[in-house]
Image (cartoon, helix red, strand yellow):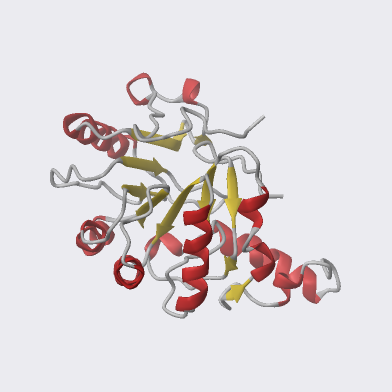
Amino acid sequence: MSITKIEWADRVWNPVVGCQKVGKGCKHCYAEQLHTQRHKAYLRGKLQNIPQYKFPFEKLQYLTERLYEPYKWKKPCMVFVNSMGDLFMHLMDREYLYEILEVIGKTKHTYIILTKRAVNMMLMLNLYYTEKRMKPLKNLWIGISVSTQRDFEMSIGFLENTKAAVKLLSIEPILENIELYNYSSFNWIIAGCETGKRRRKAKLGWFFNLAEQCKKEGIPLFIKQMEVEGAVETEIEKFPQFLKIKQFCHKNPLGLGGGEKD
């Protein structure tokens, strides 16, 4: 089932699964925890009908049976690509990545790809467009995922030099105050605290500072979730008054909320 509960997407599409940790934000990775739980169940004789759980999360797997799923979706929708991994891992097969991009280019949906490997993203995407002698795909939104100021500073230059129609910044989990340094090239910023029993606390001041910067630069900000009085809240009604912010990208062709959720 590809329908998702993620507020800013309608579906997830995982033609690849698997990833390896590269930074502080990966410490309590939800994808790793979910996959590891199911991998252990597979080893106990359960979930035998889902062979991807035969292997640990660190192993990159190409699920070719999922490659053409987007052709089956009748209504245009917002698709989060690779919610269970990073499409720009150093082990990623270039030809398979090209096949994924071909599907994106030939379908009517809008796709969002987030990565913690900004340099790989820049090199692989720019090479693809150069080899194909084509402009960036209009329905592909590219973003970097950061958790700390260092993450941001190490990644922003590569994003700026990546050919893309729409550029995003995902700050989740936010682990410290983030200064954008007046970068206004983002079309959208998504932010959220860490979730789970072992979550690291996020201060409301970090969100407030981010909101002020986004307002100054005219960048839409979507606060996915934050900790309020010791509990993680996703409902905007429970956010502090000055942080009731769930703005969508101005370039969203499907309108607020996407295109296929019922």
